[in-house]
Amino acid sequence: MKTISFRRLGLLALVAFTCLRAGAAPALIANKNVAGEKLDAATLKSVFLGKKVAWDGAGRITLAVLKGGPVAEEFLKGAVDLTPSAFINHWRRLAMTGGGTAPKAFEKEEDLRKFVAETPGAIGYVDRAMADDSVVILTPAP
Amino acid sequence: MKIKSSFPGQGRAVLAFFLTGALAAAGRGAIPLGSSNVQIGGFFSQGYLYDNHGDFPTQDEGGTFDFREMALNASTTYGAHLRVGAQAFAQRFGNIGGDRVLLDWAVADYNFSPAFGVRLGRVKYPKGLYGEALDLDIVRPFIFLPNAVYNPVLRDFASAVNGGSLYGTVNAGQGSVDYKLFYGKIPMGPKQGVAEFYNDFGAYSNPNGGVAHLAMDYAAGGQLVWNTPVSGLKLVYSRSWFSNLQSDGPFIAYPPANLHSNIPKFTWDTISAEYATGNWTFASEWQRTGGTISYGAAPFTPLIVSAVGWDAWYVSAARRFTDKLELGAYCASLKPRYPGSGGSAANKQNDLAASIHYELNEHVSCKLEVHWIDGNYQMFNTPRITNPTLPDSSTVIAVKTTFSF
Picture: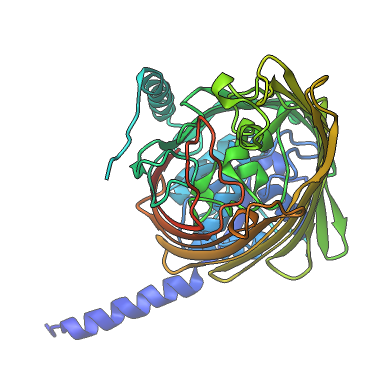
């Protein structure tokens, strides 16, 4: 039996990690009762900044966000043009000045997905690979 | 160096109240952002303040731990559009605040649409970039917002109004405009920080208690925030005014006589810009205040009328170096629009500040800040803030730790 060297194992691990990172992309997910809502980029920004608090037909909007990580960083940059720390400070400011109710924050993407699946009106984001058929994946219009 | 430290019975009660709330929030799994429809949050911030000349609103006794804020809030939603919530707040800033628990805000908020919403109750007072978040050092790199525009002694004067506001966001091409309009009353009294302005004026008899009564008819104003098409750039204009700002108290020359003052309209205009790009945040604001004050102790003195007001500006920059470390600095200027005769130092307050902000984790952050202050305009010598000598310059060092949830 041919022995695989540590050096080759390390190289394989690095390649695998790089492929996984390159494939990681955020997916916007929502509770199935949100599927019929009209959503474009401007509305999405309004939702995640707390300016839009209710869907047209799906009740109150409940935001679910990740506490940090590359998925959060990429999603927030694209959706609201904020860094994760700036996004957190935005909601701290709103919650502590009477301007809004802060999002639900999760360490793990599977917990966020489960929450969105079980909460009518909920919207959030996870890595695309973590999205399943318990939620709807939304693609906002430009 | 004598260090003044005070956490008397009332302060301990407030701390117990806060800790109870924090534990309740933890028990509900509400840290950091709630697991049921009722959301509980808050913060506790304790600091140490050293001023080499005691010009800052602490007594001239060196360092002090009388430097803290705490808040506890709860909110919930009913249906798709209605939200209610309230926040209690307590502060000790030298001899101001006294750890007294106050109602910071309490609102019933109905959001009809992103373009129009109504808040009723005790609503925060929008002024400049950071007026509504005066107490939230957790959301900024600095311990102190520039004193020139955000004087902490005036906190109770600038924090909230009992009334209501209209708010919303409208599209403006590739950007958007947020608007707020508010109207309400600001409860006033001689224990508030604003009383120091009157007691320092030199017309009230401080040995006989200083100003005894403060009142105003109403406060009103609005704010426009233009979220420009340039990523990270926003421009803000705020205007507000107080109607019939009045004071009464014993006249310094003859205490049995009452000195009455009135400012029929005192206005605040603030123009602001904030630009966030990458790890940098730049901000600058310019503010002008003004009005006409009439005062007299009839029948012993004639009615005197004079203009009053000040101009202020600052420029700040902050950079986040890592997820945990942020550095910031600002320079600020404050001067009266109608200089008095007290010499050049009494007619200016220039402040150069540098700050280090380190976040231990998502709940705890620490800051170290130094101020080099040139001038002593709007620094006080009153029974509550005793500074028999006001030197031309001073250095202030502040250290603060904040726990938020």
